[in-house]
Length: 286
Image (cartoon, rainbow, N blue to C red; front, top):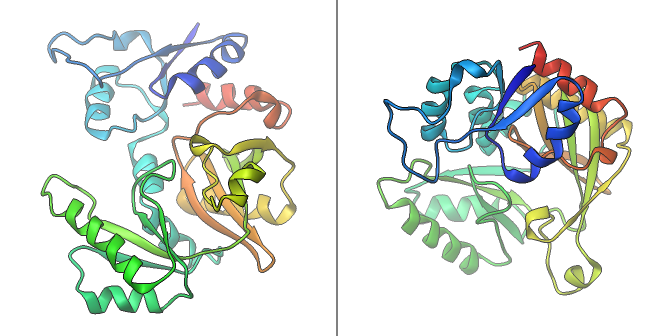
């Protein structure tokens, strides 16, 4: 039996365990976080595993787990780091001719003139987001300059702590009424997509973030040829084997907003036929 180490969350772990077991791959949860671990007595027997799903999100603990396991990962540490850097992703996609939201990188400390210039480059409201968080954490919308500078003040306070590794954030154009898609690309080809939709009551109340972890619903869809092409070109430009690509679509067209190299695997009916066969083959080929 081929054994796959799985350091992702419980939700994805539970979804993939049975389909992969049917294809001769035993999935076992492993971790080096949320606890204490004697380094000379690893809690996992690395010799039992043949591969890992994706490198752990906690990179320091992930380095320890990687040393214990000594296996290839479907998405390795470099892939996770590449995708996590939102500004780096957008900077890579621009010269590849892949449309993205108009964005400005701010690296703290930045003086007021630099912040005002970033704000005035875009039409209000603007979106402010930390460069390396997920699930919509810390993302805010500012409708005027004073509100924008206030958000920047809070980020400056957070970044003042020397232990904060990433002291950068993005200022982006706000794409009103955009439809939000997460497209999954495996080894260069789209294997499924969902549209993330907010409940109508939430939209009426002024909510605008489409993150599933913030209450949006992920509905399986067949992506258009344009969206499919953007997602596949994005994965190729970033050279990430298994990638979630977030695409926003407005009347002006589609843009790639973010990517995720540690994507949640959704219900199987939201993926193309044969997804788990292809997923199992990709793991076995590592």
